[in-house]
Image (cartoon, rainbow, N blue to C red; front, side):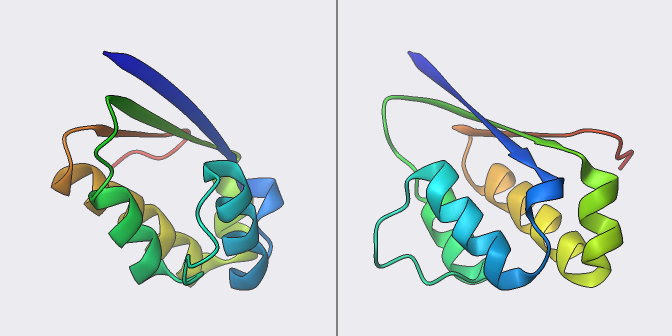
Length: 97
């Protein structure tokens, strides 16, 4: 089984619009990606390729400083997608849940 690694840098996510442009580019999402948290959850929770998707979020404190509320919702969405899909593993640096 293949393993894929995606590193998401919190310094590159300054506002919701920029965040979703960055995520679309990093994950190579299709053009129909809705650029919102529901769309992110939908694409990740239904990921069914042959492999494991490892998502590592770095510079988490910068993300939460720039987008306190939205950043928390984003991290929770990633964790929720991981809980819904055993092929998604999420690692968040500097965050103790």
